[in-house]
Each structure stands twice: as C-alpha cells, then as structure tokens.
Image 1 (tube, rainbow, N blue to C red):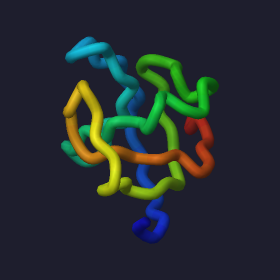
Image 2: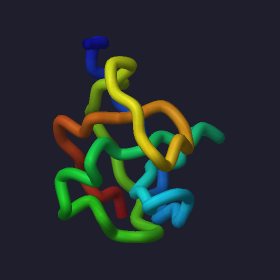
Image 3: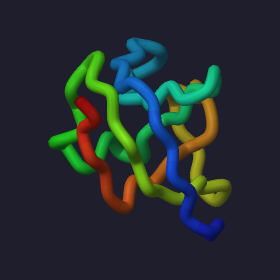
Length: 76
C-alpha cells in the first residue's frame, strides 16, 4: 500500500455505476474507498484528507484513483 498523502478538495457524489463518493482535488477525481468514513459524505463540503491511494482494489464506478481515507477535516 502506498504512503499517505494529504489532499484538499470538494466532496461529490457521482452516480456512475452503483454510485460513489469522491474527492475532487486539483482537477483529479479520487473515489473514496467504500465511502468511508460515512461522516465525509457531505456533498459540496471542502475537506482536507489524509489518505492512501489503493492500487490493489477496483470499483464498479471506476471514476479515478481509489483513496482510502485515514483522517479528514472539514475546511471552512
């Protein structure tokens, strides 16, 4: 598994496939792994996320790299 990285961006719900929660940061859409933690599921929220890019899993939505959230903070 990759090292952690810190990203800042907006949360979106993408209705592609079965639907997925995503973080859009610097023009890149990251699929939030399993939509967890559920507290991050706030469409339009700006967040700072510490997470890991998972290249060992796939998804039905296939909207971008899969991001496993380690921690997050809502940015005002």
